[in-house]
Length: 110
Image (cartoon, rainbow, N blue to C red; front, side, top):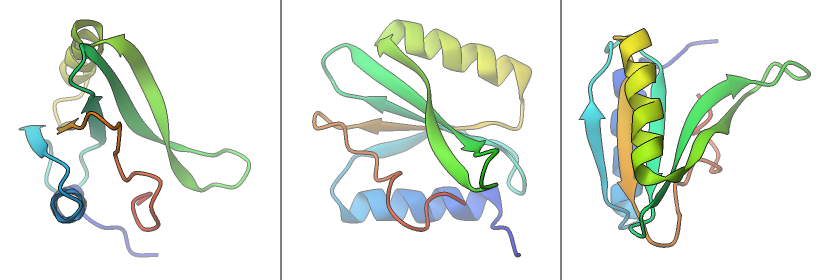
């Protein structure tokens, strides 16, 4: 199975968000080839969630899980700690009052 580079996946994801009129930004560029990706969803009401990819041990499939959620400042602190541990980490921020991330759509698990 061929894996997409992190940079390619991020650019495709940003394009998909753009086509859905969902504002998103790269807050931090990670390693272009193999960096992990965190997605922060800010709902513009002081709340946020951060998502990370995980492996389902039963099926071996990749899926997105909530890393943290709550007050936006607390979510930002969790992301800052993750960035300190992993200098190759990509961080994408989505700003959407409706809470849309599109992460559940086919093709975004990779």
